[in-house]
Image (cartoon, rainbow, N blue to C red; front, side, top):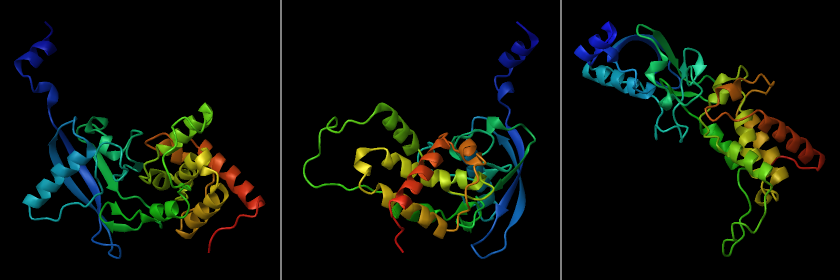
Length: 269
């Protein structure tokens, strides 16, 4: 038995020593308040904790001290709902291509200083601290993210054949959880990857054809009204997307948009 193995056997907790970290977190009391970075020290953090669990520990510490806990968005904590999302050391969701709730503290080292900020975009105003208002995404979907649904009994699942390539592309686009990482990562704060994913996954299915032209022009127009920036194909959106949605969806959106405009479709006022 080696010396390191003997040390581990003699002290089972030796390999699981907690991490000591310095956190610099954006604190802002409300949408119109002036914000600033505030430094906190936190100790004995397990490498197996998620990033949000680490923030929970910090908030427990702040509450015990009589301080205001850090506000941040979260819900399922399973990488499904898209509620969580912060900039960690300047990267959307942090150093791994995953959601913030699925990012584990083993991605960092003992003694690290970690900067935590909210999504930065005109269309995502800060509510408080790390929580931002992402209802702009909801309004984009409301502008055209639906299909005609005939009344009557549901058709058989195989009644409308769909080519395998189209169904695969549609399901890939439909994995978008609307977290906003694409906007936060883009230097232009563009929401094109999000909008393209919503347009693409409906436009590839037969059921989505009746509204296809109106859908794309109305959703793009709403995107512009919300104040998102323009897409210049930098690619940070796809690189930051926790679901790895391809920029090919943006190409599909542009193709549909040009076709719709040629066909005379115009956005609703």
